[in-house]
Structures are given as C-alpha cells and as structure tokens.
Amino acid sequence: MITTERTILRPWRDTDLDAFADMLADPEVQADAGGPVDRDAAAAKMARYRAAHDRLGYTRWVVTDHAGAFLGYVGIMPIDTWHPRSPNVEIGWRLTRASWGRGIATEAARASLVDGFTRCGLDQVLSYTEAANHRSQAVMRKLGLQREATLDFTATYDGHSWSGLVWVARSGGFRP
Image 1 (cartoon, rainbow, N blue to C red):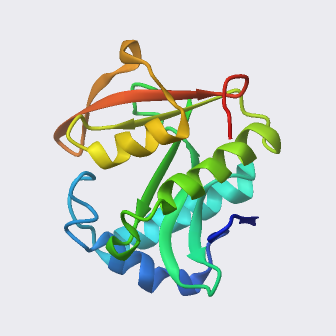
Image 2 (spheres, rainbow, N blue to C red):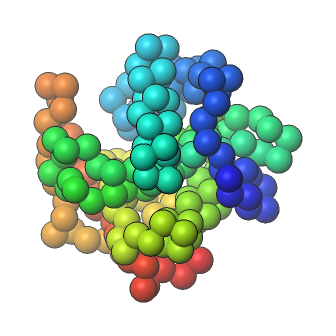
C-alpha cells in the first residue's frame, strides 16, 4: 500500500469490481482507450492486475481517497508481449470522471513511479498515449517524463490500428 497526501494506492479487492466496471463502462472515461468495456472485460482486467501484483510486487493499484472512495487506478505493468514496446514496463492511469482535473493522476502516478524505482528496482518506465489525449500528456509532463519520439509506434490490436506517443522515466533522472 502507498499513501499520498490525498490518495491511497492499494491492491485490488473483490469488492472493487462494481466501481471498476462502472468506470470502464463510461464512454468518456474510455474515449482514449477503445471505448467502454463490459463487466466481464473489467473482471478480466482486474484479474490481470491482481496476478501481476502477486507475481511482480507491482501492478495497476486501486486509487482511493482517504475515506476509501474509489477514484480509479494508477500503476506500473509489464507491456503485453504483442505490443511493439514489449518487454518494457509502462505506467498508466484511468480515473473516474469525478476525479478528473484535480491532480489525482499526477499525485498517484508520482508515488507509483517512486515505488517502482526504489522498492521494485526498475531502471526505466515507459508511458504512452495517442496524440489526441492531451490530458494524459499533461500528466506525463507534470511527472517530468521525457518524450522519446524514436519509440513512438503504431500497433494493431483487436483489429484496430492504434498509434502511441512514448514518454520515458528513468530511475537516475526521475525527480519526485
């Protein structure tokens, strides 16, 4: 568990599925992630995140406020083997709409990166997003990630082509 000024990053619990599925069913939340997903897909994602935590000690953490309200997720995961940037790890986030615009993603992602570089011993963490996702790019800038255009990619997944702009955090150059 990781605590910040306004958030708690913790492992997943069975009781998180309802809030997680609701968040992933929101078309606005999922606008830059291929669109809404159903409860079964949310459950499969949650199972992947739990398995990563059990296997690696890091994952996409549940983000709550200090009262326990679900705000979304933030965290580090290995990039899927089909992806052009595999076998790297990447940090990502997704928050409920009610949590947007408050600096929650930046605060929680910063704590996750510190954990990844210190406790987990990672040397480098990527982050990527579509060119049109200005919100995520703003978070990347605030975190101090460096843009690495030479790592940009186009990939096809589930029959859809997707292009990503890549940003990098390195353990020696990261300033929390």
